[in-house]
Image (cartoon, rainbow, N blue to C red; front, side, top):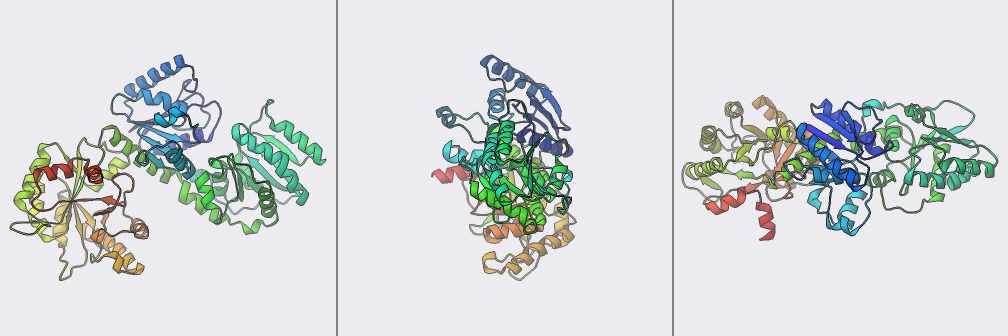
Length: 587
C-alpha cells in the first residue's frame, strides 16, 4: 500500500524518530512510504518531502490542505498517518473526500479547548502512544473508545544490540542525562540540575554528571549548570552538547537518566536507566516500576506534577552504589515485549485496516456461524440444505465477498484491499457440512472456514484426512476447534495447553497447510486462554457470545453471529447487514 506520514516540527523529536523507524519497517514489508514534514533529520528509507506543515497562519494552512490533497491523489495514497495536531488539522481537511482515511498518532496531552471536545480533527482512528494519553483522550476529550487505539512508539532493536553493562574503570562514575533540552524536557532538566544533582553530590561525591543534547546560546540550561557548579564549588555537571554516537554514551556511562525514547534505547542496550520525565518521576526502571513506565511513556506523558526531588536523589544514589541490583537482561526483555518495531508495526497495520474499513463505512464484518447443514428435517441448530442454498443466493445477489482468515491476514497486513461487502462463513467440522455445505460453496465459488476437532470420539466425529485435504484444495480454510471440543472451563491449564497445541500440530500434518485460526469450544474464553492460543501460533480466534462489536479490536476474540434454522429474510438481512451488534445493543 501507499502510506503518507505527515509531521509538523522544527527540531528532532521522538515523533520524528518513530516515524522514520516505522516507515523503514513498512518499506521492508513491501509498502511505499512518503513523509511530509517541515524538517526531517533522521535517516530513513522513505521519500521525504519538506513542506511548511507547521506554519499556522490561515493562508498557509489552506495551501497545505491543497498540497496534501493533490499529493494523495497523484500518489494514490491508501492511508494518511499524522503525528501532531497541526499535521492532523491539514490532513483531516485534505482527506474528507474519497476513501482515504486519516490515522493520527497522538504523542502528547492535548489542550482542553471547547472546540477540541466538540470536534476532532484526528480522523478515523486516534492512536495514543501510552495508556495515560489513551485515558486522557477518552476521559477528558470524550473521544469514543471505538475511535481510539493504544500503540506504543517502537524502536528497531537490530540497531541497539544488547550487551552486559560494563562501563570502563575510571576515577569517577558518570551519570548521563540524555534528551532534548527544550520544551517541557528542558523545564524538567532545570529542576534536575538546580535541585537534584547537588543533593546527589552531597551524598555521593564520586560522580560526574554529563548533559547530552543539543544546546544553543538562548538555552536556560547552560547558565543553570554554571550557577550550580559555582554554588557547589566543583564543576561536577558537564554540558557535553550533541553527541553523534549516543549508543556509546549508553554503553560507557554508569547510569542513564532519561525518559521516552532515550529510556527505551538505553534499556535495549543493557544500561541501567532512571526516568525523570517531562510529566513525572518514575525512578529506576525495573519490574517494580514497569507499569508506571508503560502508562506514562517513562514519565513523559502523564498529567504534569512536581518532580519528586528526594525520591529522585535516592534512586540515583542507589543506582550508583549498587549497579548489580539492576537487571540488564530484564530491561532488554521488557523493551522487546512492548516496543519492538515489528510488533508495533503489526499493531499499526491493524489500526490502518480498521480506519480504511471505517472510511468505507464498513462498521462490522459479519462472521457467520453455521453448526450443521443437513439434507432433511432437523432442529433449530441444523439448517436444511435448501435454506442454506437460498442464503448463498442472497449473499451472491447482494454483492458480498466471502473471505477466510488467510484473506483477512492479507488485509490486516495491508497486502490486500478490503472488499466493499466482506463476510466470513464458518462451519463446525461435521461430516454433514462436508457432504451438504461444501458442494454448494464450490458451486457458488465461495470460500469459508471449517473448524475441525482433531480427536475422533463417539460424540465428536471428525473429518478424514482426505476430506480435509479436499477442502484445502478448494481454498476452504481449515481451523482448529481444539482436540476434543471440551469446554475449557472444565479443564486444567495443562489440559488446555494440550488441547490447543496438540490440535494445531495435528491439523498441520493432516491438511499440509498453515493453521491460523481457532474456535473456542462453546465460545468459552479468558485472557489466559487467549495467551495459550496466541503462544501456539494462532493469529485469529472466534467466539460465540463474547467479544466486542468492533471486529478489529481483538483478533483473538472475534464474535460470531449464529445462524438458526427457519430464519426469516429480514433476520438474515439483519445478521449480514454490518450493523447487527449495534442493532442488538440498541434493541
